[in-house]
Length: 200
Length: 260
Image 1 (tube, one colour):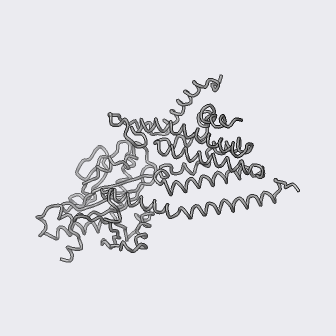
Image 2 (cartoon, chains in turn green, red):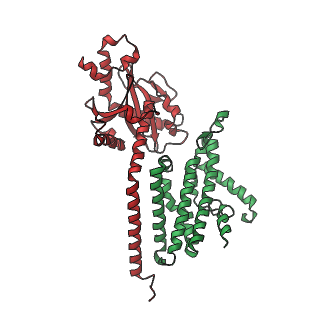
Image 3 (cartoon, rainbow over the protein chains, first blue to last red):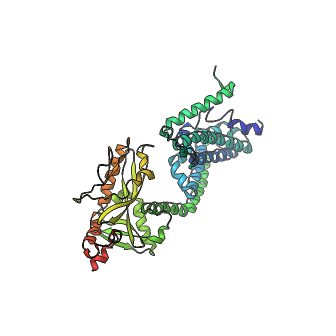
């Protein structure tokens, strides 16, 4: 597979969130504001990239019987690294993300890419695949958070955008079901553009 | 000799090596970041306390002294004594234990240009989880009133109960005298709108959270009741100063009056 396609595919045509419908749980939970959504997206990108890299390096030595356990240990380690760093250097954001940083371990995208890609591909390809899938996830999170923060709080990244024009905040946007509806709309638009994804 | 990767021996050695490497790595990371994380937690508390005092722009260490209320009296902790200062903040880490305690309640005193305010920590339960905060109290015209409040919550409903963490609602508490004419604890969030000078509008749709806030205010401030009473009686016992401006009367220190 060509490297460039390897990179662009998960960003749009085969996006993990809106095509494979993975990682929905955190997409609902951390998209109330843009800042935590962005940090969450980048954290997941870090974890998918390095878990893919490490597992790809280990792929020839891992006993297949404990393969999943080894993957979990690697992923969990990376998640703890992210969590510790956020607590030390981005304390406010880490408080907003609360348990969802720890729950990256259970994000299906991470383990899905390790199983489906890293175990059968070379380290560099796997690393790129991890970054691309993480960014594909981050992109959707930021997109959802953009609409939710704009219409729910009238701000973007905490800066007053439309509230000053007398916009009345719609607190429905702050509830998790609204994130699901927005993701549904994104999927709708995405499938309208990519006709091959439409089920007959 | 080819290694059988599915033999028990290989698997056991593999896991042991993996766990040792990962364990060492994480232990190293946790230890090296520990100080920075602890500093963040401490700084957050200081910022919250300064917010309650209503002067977030000032530096906590410059203007605030801390201590304990023991048997209704303020016992100051030497700021230079790092161990004692840590002990005060360690108490704040366990707010629930603090509210359940019988004595030695931590308190923060802000003093500048003759104005004195005290901040007390609060803890309670909202609808979905814990709520906590800091309330700043001062004495104006012989009455103990709230000069500022900050509250936070673990998981109240966004847009409803979670509004207690917003400045809009916290501002409503400012200037509310906490005891009524009969000396009963009277500050509360009132459903249907404030009925008297002690009450604050409750949040529509957040009644359970407001009930939690009321309980938190009553139980947490209640711990400081004897001390607060000593602040107001001290003012009454100083008739000579009664004619002076309310601002100054309010700020007479209890200990000073007792010496007279």
